[in-house]
Length: 363
Image 1: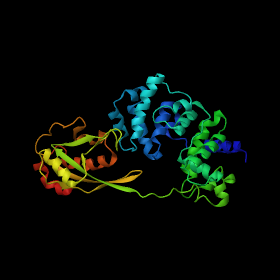
Image 2: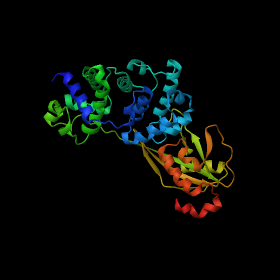
Image 3: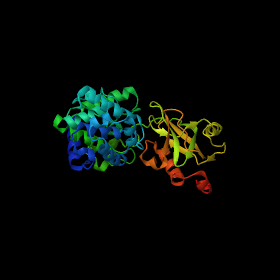
Image 4: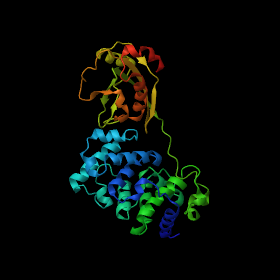
């Protein structure tokens, strides 16, 4: 099969059967395409849709994003996960303003030099916005190429990655077709050549697909070797006083970098010591544990609630702050923390220990 046929079939299929209703498809503005591409990394389209519209309403252009405090960006990102993306998005916007006067460079090579923009993301922006003949290679595209051309082996290894990149670059159509071709590969991987039960009967590449001919769609691409997932335990102190809760700004390079989270401790005993230092007693109310899965480990956090009588003391460090519980929805909080604090807020927002003592057992 001539490789030019591969691209032509993808383009024709995308124009007739691909997705055309995604909010970021109706623009060639590199800022909007870039925001969408970053959000779509490790995140489903259905989740991104709502965030994308809200994010652009708050930050309509690269200048607004660059000028915004990082806390505002993280607040708008809260719940999407992989928060390094938000920090890189902010840094990249500042770089575009400082280096290029707020105008995105037009080549994939130049885009790739900006913070947080990798090779595939740079190619997608350049292809969609400037018709550059640049190859993308996200997870969906790797699966399409692996099955169609019979590429076995672990797709994450350097050798297989090099082969895939060389193949992806050799398949590129003419520049005028790059937006449809790039979107078509994404659509095929997301809606047809899916991981389980691929819909080969409607695939435009089925007649020349190695995996279909050999009945190996279930084996390609090769599954990654399973790794044991570590369990990390921690204890959160939920110190509540008159409708506010004590939170700590997380280090930028750590877990949930830049977001707010409860003070955490290695043990319940350490949490009790901290509660006493805040003017509370040593008796903490233990709430149900919060389990949250990350890429390489699972976090198991045990929350301990203490209701303080006095007004919130001044935060001990610049990283601590008392957040009014009625502001939980708008705060820059990780998703599992926000879910937990919603429950706390419904019972203790604006309340005192005496007024809520009878309700403690409800938690």
